[in-house]
Figure 1 (cartoon, rainbow, N blue to C red):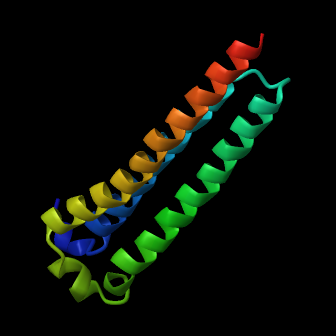
Figure 2 (figure 1 turned 120 degrees about the vertical axis):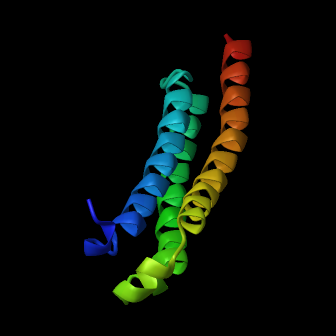
Length: 120
């Protein structure tokens, strides 16, 4: 298959990879928030924090995709000039920021779960 017929294929694959990595981080945070029982104030706080993180992570993905990939979407020649290493690095950078936030929020969610268990 000749990839020169599809100048934006690598670019779209990189954008989708960044989205997948970000959604995996969101899923991980949501899964951790579910471990805190919903009938307590800690549970409500955990879910509110998880949904706030989800909105923030998707906003980060949108902003980073727009600023990182946006200039290359205007011209097919520019999209072909972008190296594969750059596309992989950009997707991993976007995902790394999302995962860093996810790990920090998971620590807070674990503290909420511990506090909830201590009150029982």
